[in-house]
Length: 466
Ligand SMILES: [Zn+2]
Image 1 (tube, helix red, strand yellow):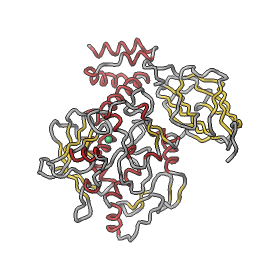
Image 2 (cartoon, protein in one colour):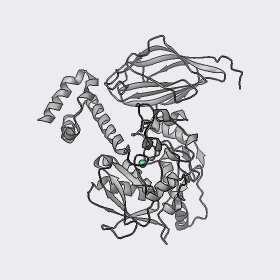
Image 3 (cartoon, protein in one colour):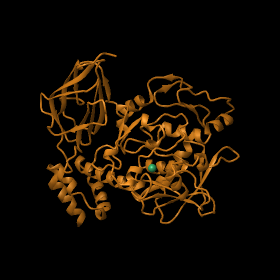
Image 4 (cartoon, protein in one colour):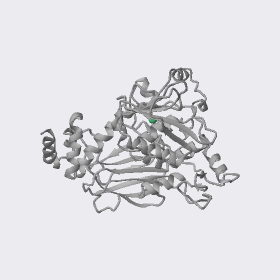
C-alpha cells in the first residue's frame, strides 16, 4: 500500500516539481517503489527525483568519513607513513609479474555476499585492457588476494597489494554495483591507483577549494596530495579515479574546479568512466606494453601521442588521434573527449550572440555544454542578456533542474549559478579578464525557453597590452 501512496503523491504533485523531492520515498520503501515506477514509465521529473536520490546514495557510499579519502582503506603501516608524511614506495604495493609477464591477481567472493555480475564485468574490463589477469580462488589460501564483499561500509578498497595478509577486502555495498564504473574504480585502487585529484601534479589541473570542504579532519584528508608515480601520463579529468566537483562539500558548493574550463564538464559522478589514460597508466605500471611488444616480436613501441602498443599487436590510440601509430594529432585529448560527450560545447572568439541550444525553441532535453567566450588581449567579454527563463529552483534552493553557471573572474573558482528568471532582460555581466565561461546543464525535458545574450568585447581598464 505504501507504494501506491507514493505513486498517488507523485501524480498529485506533477504540477509542482520541487515538492517531488520532499515526497521522495524513504530508504526502506525505495526498492519496491523503484520497481513500480519502472512499470509505469516515469515522467522526466519523477525520473529526476529518483536520479537525484540514487546519486545522493552513491555519494553517501563513497563519502564514508571513517575511511581515508572516503573509500580508501589504510593498513596501520600506511597510516603511520601518512602521519610521517612519507609514502611507501609504491612498487612495494604492486602485484608482481609472473614468469610469463602477466600479472596475476587472485580473488574470491566472500560473505556477506554480493551480486557478482558487475564485479565480473569490471574484472573483464580490466583484463581486456591490461595484462592483469584475475583468478577466482574460491577459498582463502593464506596469500594476498582480493575479497569482494559487502561489510556495509560503502564502496572502498586498499590502495595496492597488501602483503602478509590472507586476502584484502574490496567492499562493495549494493549501491556500489548499480553500474560498472564503481567496481572498476575500487579494483583500480587495489591495483595501486590513487584518486586522480590526489596525484602529485594535480595542482596543475584543478583548484582544490578547501573553504567549501567539511571542516573535519577526515574530509580535509580527502584532498591530500600523494607522491604518486604518474608515468608521464597527463592528468585526466575523465578518469574513473576522479571524484566529482562537490565531493565532501560542506555547503553544496564545489570543492574542486578544473583549471582548464572544459575539464569541469567531467567533474561529475555520471561523466567519469574508465578512460584511455586509466588504461595507459596501468599498462605502463605493470609493463604490459613491454609484454605486448615481446609477444608480437616488435622491438620498440611505435605508438605516438600517448598511444600504446596493445594486445592485438597494434597501437591503441587516444581520442583525438588517428593513423596506424596514432601519429596524427587531430585535436587535443580533452577537446576530443568534449566533442564526443558534450558536442554542443564551443569556444566563441567573435562578437555576436550566444544562446542556449536551439533558442528560441524551448529546451526540452537533458543536455550539458560549456560556451567558452574569449575576447582579444586587453579586452573583456560583456554579455547583455535579452532573454533568460529556465526551470525554477528545487526545494533545496539549488538550480537542480536547469542551471547556467557563469565564471567571469580570472579565478575560475568564483561562480554564480542562475535558473528561473534570475537574470533580468538587459542585465550586463562582464568578465574580469579576457575569458568568460558559461556552463549550462539541463536535467529535465520539461520545456523552458532558455537564454539569449549579445556578446561585445570592451576595453579592459588599465590594460597595458601583452
Ligand atoms: Zn576511491
